Amino acid sequence: MIYYTKDNNKIFIPNSILNKENGHGKCGTVYKYNDDLCIKIYNRGIDFDHCLLNTDIYEDLKKIKSDNLVDIKMALYKDKENKSITDAYLLTYYEEKYDDFLEIYTDYLLYNLEEIFKLIKEISIFKIRLHDLKRENIILTKDNIVLIDPDRWYYKFKDSEKEIEKLNINNIMAMFSKITKESLKNNYLDFLIENNLYDYVISNKLFPLTSNKDRAMKVLSKRLNGYKRPIDYVYSMKK
Image 1 (cartoon, rainbow, N blue to C red):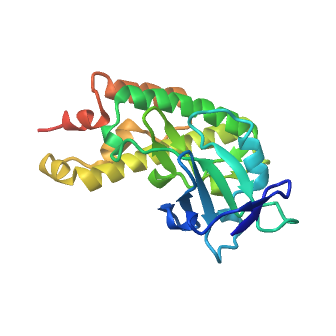
Image 2: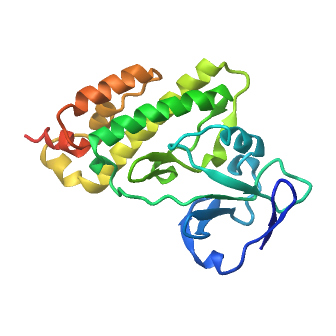
Image 3: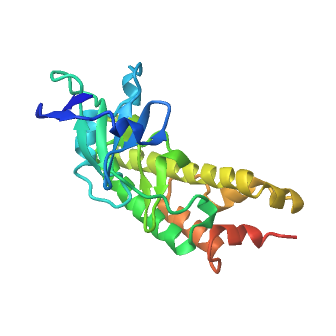
């Protein structure tokens, strides 16, 4: 499979790489490229631009240095002439450490949420709106919560940086609330039923829908104070 860089350098992807699938989504598939890199290739037949990484957004994100943002090494194209959207890209390989979001450590969560809010501020300067935030699009590494798959992020030039920042903060809080709810349903349903607890109540307590990062940090810090992990906070609600 042949691709081109922005400077029209030819990149050959051998078929052996395509036998090393590392993840699959609606719009594309990620393959292990080597020990340090993966390659995301968009599925054949996908032709709606909103599912493909915009080259301008890629260029803007490359200006941001954050351990919480996926490190895209190189954008790749099938067409030498048309480079407005990517057809594939090389990215850093991240190793998932935690399967269950509620099993992460409180200090880890609070530190990373604070760092993600800093990242959001930088992203919003470029008037980029976050979109398609979900558990499948973050990786919980040993040290960082990494936002991956910026494919469906988009520009919102009509809004101010501050307005975009607030919307992005709200989206992040909604994502973490949803992830918490999913974890409770998938892994702790019996506990919830036994103790007459509701997943949406707990998730909203930890991650209230707000566009105020200070309030978000204050609420989460207060709820998790004295608990090693978020699930320990949940267990404290036992009858």
